[in-house]
Image (cartoon, rainbow, N blue to C red; front, top):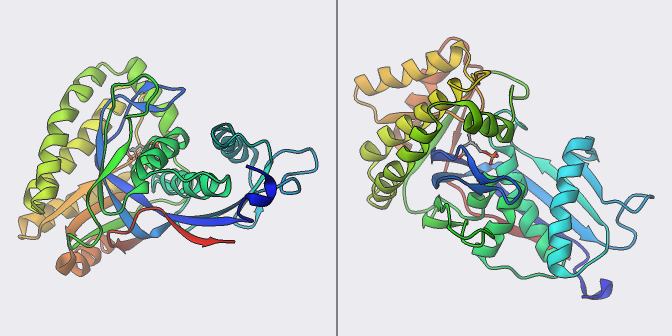
Length: 338
Ligand code: PMV
C-alpha cells in the first residue's frame, strides 16, 4: 500500500460497554487473552471518537506518532499505549508511515466507565481502515482486544459475548454479537459517586488478583455457569433472570479483588448506598439490578419504562453526584472517510 492510495483520514466512533458477566484475569498478558469469557451491553452516547491519518508528515518532528487527546497533545503514558497499538496495525498492513491520532471521549476517562473499551474499539476501526485494511468484525474484535480486553466487545452493538478462545495466538479470543441494540428495550442508569481517576488500573489489579487472591481459581470456575445462564437470559430478553446473574458476577469479581494482597477496594460509601437503593427498588417491585466495574460507580440495569424512577431513586441516594441514563447503542462505526 503506497501513501497516495491510503485514505487521507478516517474517523470512527464506538460506544463504551458495561460487562454483566465480568472479565477479570488474563491467560496471556502480552496478547491480552482473557482467562474466562464475559458478556456485556454496549451503550449509546457514551463513547469515543478517533480520527487517524497515516502520512509522512503526520508524525512529530522526531518521526513518532502524534497523539492528541481532547485537542491537546496526550500525556506520555496514553501516547505510548496508542503508539504500541499503531505498531500492530502497521505490521499487519506492511506500513512504515507515522500517524496522527486525535481522540475525544464522551466518557469520564479512567473512572471505571470503560473509556479504554470505547477508545480502543474506535481506534482499531479507524486505524485499520486508515492503513488500508478491511477487517471483518471478528478481526476487528481481535485487534481491539490487544489495546484493552473489554474493547473487543465494543465492536458489537447491544449485547455481546467475549470468548476465552483456546488458541495461543488469540485469533479465537474475540467477541460476537448476541442481540443488537434495537432488540431489547432496557436502560443502564449510571450513578456517578466520585470524580477523578480510579485507584488501581484494571490490568495491574487483575494481575495482583491472579497472583495473590486465594479466591481467584474459584472466581474463574464460576464464570462459565454465569455466562451460560446470562446468554440464555439475554436471548430470552428475561430481565428477571439476567439481573441476579449480573449482580453475583460483579460481587464475586469484587470479592476476589478484595482478597488480593494488598487488597483492591474500588467502592466508596456512596457505592454501597446505591446498592442498597437498588435492593429497596426491588423490594417495591421494580426490576432493577446493579453492576460495578473497576471504580466506585454503580450501573443499574432496568426496563426503559422504569428508568425515570430508578434515576430519581439513585439521584436521591447520599453521595451520588449525578445519574446518567443510557440506551443500548450500536457497535463501532465509521463517521467519515476522506
Ligand atoms: O479491558 P480492561 O482492561 O479495561 O478491563 C475491564 C475490567 C472490567 O471493566 C472491570 C470488567 C469488564 O469485563 O469490563
